[in-house]
Length: 218
Ligand code: SAM
Image 1: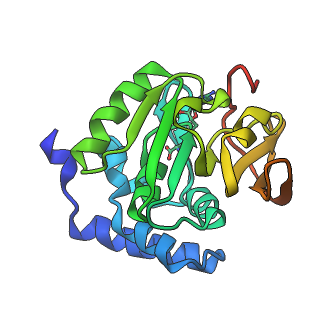
Image 2 (image 1 turned 90 degrees about the vertical axis):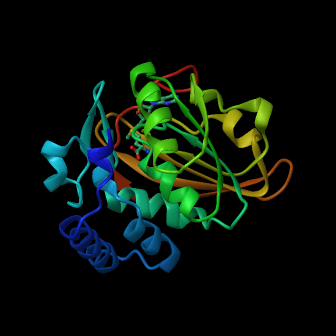
């Protein structure tokens, strides 16, 4: 609906404040901050809730799922060190906001969602905003092997472990970011593929995501 695509003075001001807030929380990558400063996050909300769109909170998008908190989106994006032209697999499309952030950084995004109602909505909203990602419907815990390997893989739901199958879909030198833990809390884990057989794992801060549900998940 056309009315949704209005980026007025109030929303632009709120977005600037959000960027300042993310800086104060330690997000330092200017390209990530610029992307967040550019994308109208209120387009992902019903107009009734536009006043929530630039708060640093996760927010329900239906189907028991959420649009991730801006800090979490910025954090996961920052640790991926996205370069223009990177081929990125995103598991858990959700609202598509994270997809847009990755695309603003020049990534070629392959994104997969397992809930059909969410998938159907997002494949309409994003192209309407000019973001033409490659959308897939299905269980992303298995990755998308036909399009592998990827420079970067981002999992935007909490997993019980790092799925081996995703590691195999990384290019050598590639980075995976995935929250791993139980239903209450997950540690953000990055894994760098250093060779055909070797991986380097780093554990970062604690977050709380909705669960990754699938064959290689909960
Ligand atoms: N990045 C999203 C955003 O910016 O709105 C947030 C995603 S939300 C926190 C997590 C999403 O992962 C949900 O939409 C959920 O349905 C999806 N999901 C959970 N398990 C999945 C799986 N195995 N494959 C694909 N999507 C999955």
